[in-house]
Amino acid sequence: MSRTTHCEEHDAIVIGAGISGLYQLYRLRELGLRVRVFEAGSDVGGTWYWNRYPGARFDSESYSYGFSFSGELLQEWEWSEHFSPQPETLRYVNFVADKFDLRRDIRFGTRIVRASWDEAALAWEVEAEDGHCARARWLITAVGPLSVPQLPGIEGMADFRGPSFHTSDWPREPLELAGRRVGVIGTGATAVQLIPVVAETAGHLTVFQRSPNWCAPLHNAPIDAGTQARIKAGYDAIFARCRASHGGFIHDADRRKAMEVSAEEREAFYEKLYGEPGFGIWMGNFRDTFVDEAANRTISDFMARKIRERVRDPETAEKLVPKDHGFGTRRVPMETGYYETYNRDNVRLVDLNEAPIERITPDGVLTSGGEHPLDILVYATGFDAVTGGFDRIDIRGRHGQSLKEKWADGPKTLLGIQISGFPNMFTLVGPHNASSFCNIPRCSEQNVEWVADCIRHMRERGVNRMEASEAAEAEWTEHVHESASRMLYTKVDSWFMGVNPNRADKSRRIFLLYGAGAPLYREKCEASAANGYEGFELA
Ligand code: NAP
Image (tube, rainbow, N blue to C red; front, side):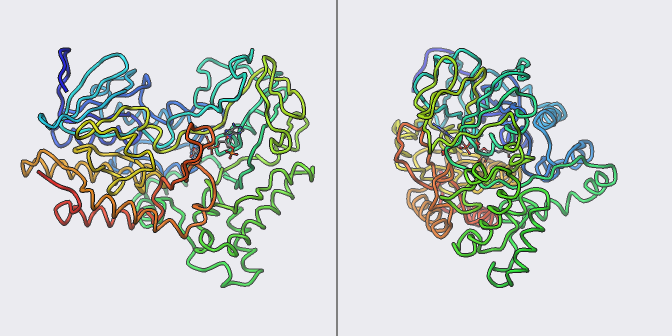
């Protein structure tokens, strides 16, 4: 590529100043590299910067989510709740950025729209929407797996008279909900956090549900002083526990199978999990829950009973019980009073299977059952998951090959971290990488450290170019699909499977994550590095 305009020169470019991008900056700086991070937002935080809807909070225990690399940071920062609310999390990310003086290497308000590999110069050149140009030997994407909001493309959306927005574009200025008629379209993890909070203040709330999800109680609580002290003294054990678990959480599967115990024992176990905070009921359940349909049915039946107990109107309860997929085969939304919300007089659940949306009108939502008048309309309609953040950048590798075209039939990567044809580019929390199916900071720290070690290795040996071999990439891609094939979540439509009915290519159905677990993933990354980065061509 040749240019006449000025182009900044760096050693490494990182796209994104969220949790992963910030840590990558910190690590590469340690190696003495000149690093530039480009961030579309006006400040740090990534997902926690964008997602400011009421009720947004961690579903991971706060103390299992923070960065683990600095003992000093761990002791200085105090989480106030077991599951931190978004404003506190954003303060935390800012605290980290300030403590390690990260902002000086970040150019904010800069959305990268193009990235091309220059084989002659062995460098990447990136270009931002505003024409800003930068070049570097290494390109690291930290664009996030859930960063591209998806609006549903329903007819008439532009006609709505009142405020209407996607959850990740929640207005920064205060939005008066009191006395207003609010509509929420969608019932995924975002909506399930939002709905109970909105219901408390809105005059009336209408929830438009296409598919119910199996939601589990979060049981959030403030962290008292004694617990705070135990957490601070116990970080090593907390991180060791996360490291050993399948998904980087403090919860890991019970070693028993569901049918190995009596019905009474099973029921008691489910009750215990249901009463405990966090993802235990999902991640800490019987080990065959997500591979064996009969085992899965036992927990699904238990969860359905809970919904029927908690929702007073039997017809509404029935609408909230998923019928097309088993518990935990899609991402489990964590809830605080979600089901009780439907017992309120000011809340109405509209089942879109009975009465599909026909169009958005200036005054509300028109379904086949009639018009629902609204003052505010919220689209909690999800994201173009995992590959979306890549698709919106025109990434060109060797011989100008387009990444979007290469991935047209689904991602192909090696270890979910590099792509054949795209030398010196690393994809943090990318597709087919364990980080995208994990307590993200736990797994992304591993990604970041692996990349930093790899770049150090290259520099020490005078290696200027590294590229995943086609054969190793094909083998990894096959391993990803083969290891996921037994899992029940590959039989169900969700963003895990790249299914999003709002995408242009509605027919795509391909597993986007890595399902064999973070420990095995880490082992495979370490084995490759120990064997001189086996599977990669270094030159
Ligand atoms: P999502 O799980 O993809 O849910 C989107 C919702 O919108 C679904 O209920 C979907 O219905 C509905 N929808 C989409 N298009 C529609 C249309 N045209 N008409 C009617 N309904 C429509 O998205 P999300 O709730 O934003 O969550 C995405 C992910 O973000 C989660 O799975 C989770 O990983 C992450 N998240 C994390 C946290 C946390 O950690 N604290 C919080 C929130 C979200 P269908 O199911 O029928 O398509």
